[in-house]
Image (cartoon, rainbow, N blue to C red; front, side, top):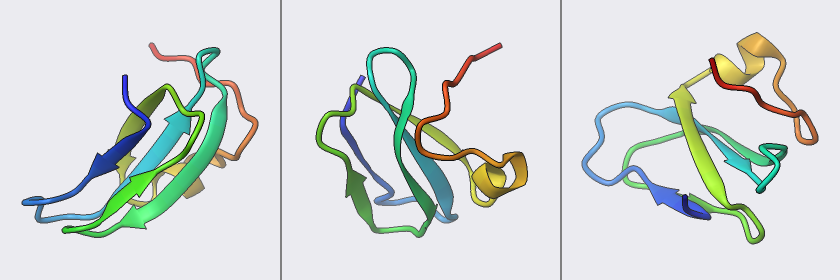
Length: 68
């Protein structure tokens, strides 16, 4: 659980999905490049996905996320 992440020492971009306690999307940082940081006040967790995955799946703020 965290409200922020960084991509220090990474070699590729990611999508960062910020979630609240109910696993509802509160923010998305798309294509977060290496050596960057991102955060969202009020988030209780961050899910990292491959760059472009949020767009491919149509994920948007307000969506409820379920993990398989």
